[in-house]
Length: 165
Image (cartoon, rainbow, N blue to C red; front, top):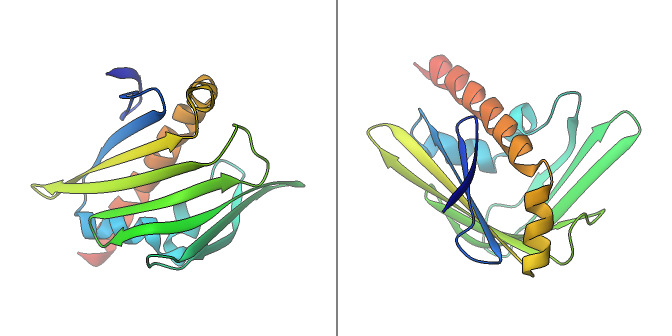
């Protein structure tokens, strides 16, 4: 059940502990997967207005770790986790934990990329430790932030596809 649409992003809550976000990109899934899993590429688009992705570490394999730290002036936000599943260019599952926890418990996120006719549907499923944690995230501006981030990814993919043509 879709509970919210923000720009081109649909947000659904299929269970009491999950949020599912879907977004289509006009790019092949290999290109989308590469942009989601390559530190040098992530540093170019995976940030917000004024925020810089100062630390971007990503070990692309099952059991590999990742770490992101965004900075804005003197403020910093960090997130890390472990990759549980990695099947390029189709799927990746990882744990996630923020340094300054803004919801209780940890979460697990799974990204699935499905390509059809040169377009890629990204489905991000985040499973939280509890319904309370999921509800707290739903009340936050998470959907607006994710939508803006995926808009930046869309621009990045368009520029990258143009450069490869």
